[in-house]
Length: 243
Image (cartoon, rainbow, N blue to C red; front, side, top):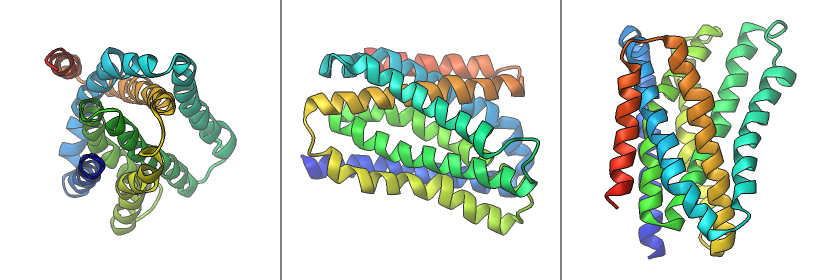
């Protein structure tokens, strides 16, 4: 059973890596198309992530551990504080060079992608169904994440070859690495601790959807992004209800 679960976890994290690579390739080779359609992918991914979190992952974690609400808050606020730390204390927008403006976000995205790999380990160890639900939204948001990472690096002055390499290392390869590092530990913990980790993961998922993807979609101001968001929510509802 453990080997089967590990197979699903690695499949999800590898798929996330591949989707990120596709995003990097698209924006490198077809930058106009990628820029025009990234908002729709982000809106759909936000709809899935937020809906799945509130309809399934959060209730599941609360059932597994009565202190889970606290850790849900920890997951949400932890990512928020990390982003504030990067923006306020590490890289003041008025003092940073263009080079730093590419490197700092790349490091932040790299950590986030590494945490994605850990989230796959956590959610699939709760159940295959929970892992699949989390993976749907997370994999879909990898495409625009690859685009964003490449664009930030290129605008910071890196040539296309270096921007592609660094974006791959930070946004793509870090996800399966996070899975490989975390899985041997997560597979040995009891259900109560797993509930805590699931709650933290849920907080992280809600933060990514509500604080990163949706604001980015609003800044794009595309006409049909609400439709993409609604489709994402509908997909999540159908999957959860049909379980």
